[in-house]
Length: 259
Image 1 (cartoon, rainbow, N blue to C red):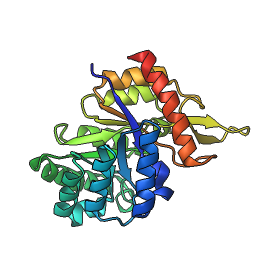
Image 2: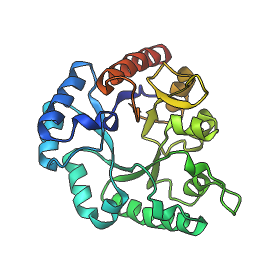
Image 3: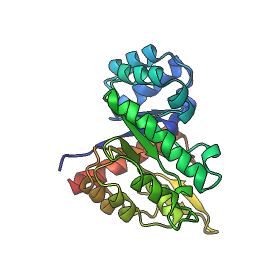
Image 4: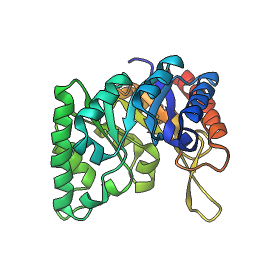
């Protein structure tokens, strides 16, 4: 098994990538703390050519993105061109749009629409990737969860997943078992830690500062064939840049003892 590459989901640093100057400063910062693998998400209205220039300047490897599903549908060709500029072969969607989450019929409509997009991407040497939250584990009238249908009714050669460990935990499923269900269909795994406050309410945490068994999940991520682990923390109690540095240091240690 190959060593997994570690990096940053830029959504965590979204407040610092909304214009070209801030984006360059963020790429420079990541480079300085040893991060050269990134996922592009929530970036500001910066022309793709300028983003591509920064990617090359700071030697960044863009493993996947998160873009809106409507852009995939309405601007398919432009989206593919952007990703080729980024030298990124996987196009991700962060969440199923609300209009597809009404009932089983609408969920199946999303599976149909996203499968069609995934096929177009595949014909152009790209892959579609879906990032889960917790609602995908809602049981539908057919007796299966949304996630069950997404796994079972899509083409594994074209339709891949971006498993999110926090949301697995939040949904009450075993992160390790959920990861194994998408074996061979994962390029990128999201690591974010899960803790509870004094009242037992769930909160996001830096890697290693919560309650998830990361040594086990790192090993399972290797087992299922993942190539990248991206650190993502939706909200932070400290400066997100400091949060990212803490998570990266801790994750590097986890990876070092499990390779």
